[in-house]
Length: 67
Image 1 (cartoon, helix red, strand yellow):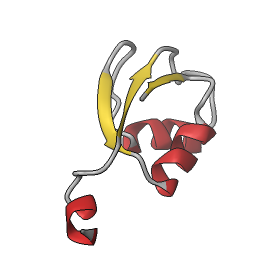
Image 2 (cartoon, helix red, strand yellow):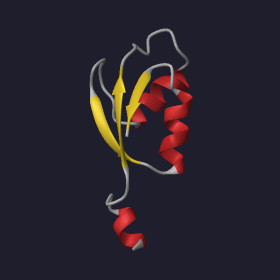
Image 3 (cartoon, one colour):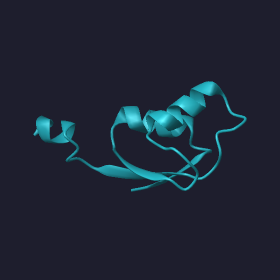
Image 4 (cartoon, helix red, strand yellow):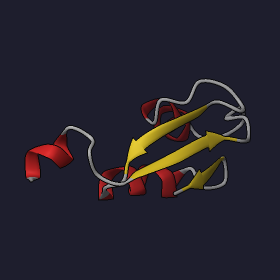
């Protein structure tokens, strides 16, 4: 069961970049890149686990999240 979650079989979140990272701290830009987002309007699906939730929380003013 744990192996399935490690491969991405668990719950997923859709994260969309809705604001530009220009003018924000470098760490926030790097977090957006770490989430896999490249440009405004770009969406990615990430596995829902505490590390991703923490990254999303750090840039919550720049992204939109759907379950």
